[in-house]
Image (cartoon, rainbow, N blue to C red):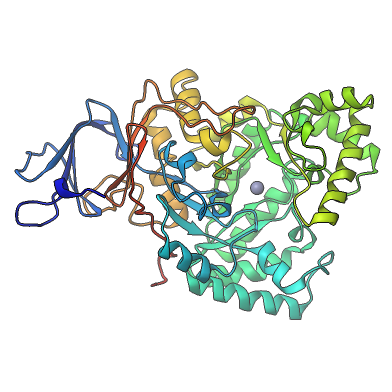
Length: 498
Ligand SMILES: [Zn+2]
């Protein structure tokens, strides 16, 4: 790497001075015109700054300079060592990914962190410890039941170890195996342990459709009893007869906050999700045609179900259930049943994932209302090579669609939900705001052109309008070109020293 321009004649590291920037500092305050000085890995100053002799100067030409975006629900852990450039993320302006989501975390975290520190990525990584991962370690294949006291003790011991390694808290995925079989007392015991260690709780709640209200009460109860911050992952109303209830949900969330519960949410800006077919069938019975009819009518219409992964018959990838059913000369419900059985058969035979589907289940007015709730921050819920466009497009999509097109949020408010707000929700004290002394994770973007280009058929297409990205003072993206720097760090829970 050529760094000659970064050193002064005396050999000291030069500062970078970004001039002519429209600075949006992340707090929600109005933009100001000025310069930002980066010294080493920190922001040294901002405002009307004189150019020093040794400064490396970058003219922002009036573009927006913001703190690097913090993705509070990321699946980037899965491919991070293969894709340390994290292109799908840095091209959105994301500088920090919080992984270990939906109850599923790299295990043990100490090894994951050590590997990341030996071969850093371009982005910072923080992780939750996943309940499902711990449950799987302790209960193995015998998981379709509540845990015994002995098993809960064993899970607690593992959680202690993950918290000591620096986990930011506990994540649950209560709609997935094996956590779906847990009772609230099991979750509460682990949550209390997390709270006692100064951690936080994030959850893919037990239901996002049929039993949404009960699931909401469960996370509120966990926040109430433990006193720690609790966050609803990818907040959504994913059922036709629930559509339009966002104002009611927000009232309930506000009431919980007024009670003193530190309840927040994150969201990705799409009306469709991606998961496995069987998540739609809580009893996990692919022969239950009545349940499948309910899915088609209420949860995901056949023309809104797109297969994104189907190794048992790869031809189906990219097709909707309606198209597949027509090709098979079956009703959509019957085709769903047969394909679910094929997926289960593939998993049993190979041990590999049998399917992934995109399901169109949400309505845009609910999505917009949840984005506008002052305690919602933006996330991707995506991986580094996600077949759902959220993996490459979520943050720019908010700026294009909900700021520029629909005026749901001001630019400052949207950036707040991508920076200082998630930093606060995750307990990151040194990131998320442009201020002297903060770590220099920054993004320079064009607010008039920034947009997502990823689609369900071209999900990897990078976003447009992200000009430059810095992580810990080093530029990782420069006018769309990827640098050689890998400055990403492991972010441990504030109370834990490496
Ligand atoms: Zn989830």
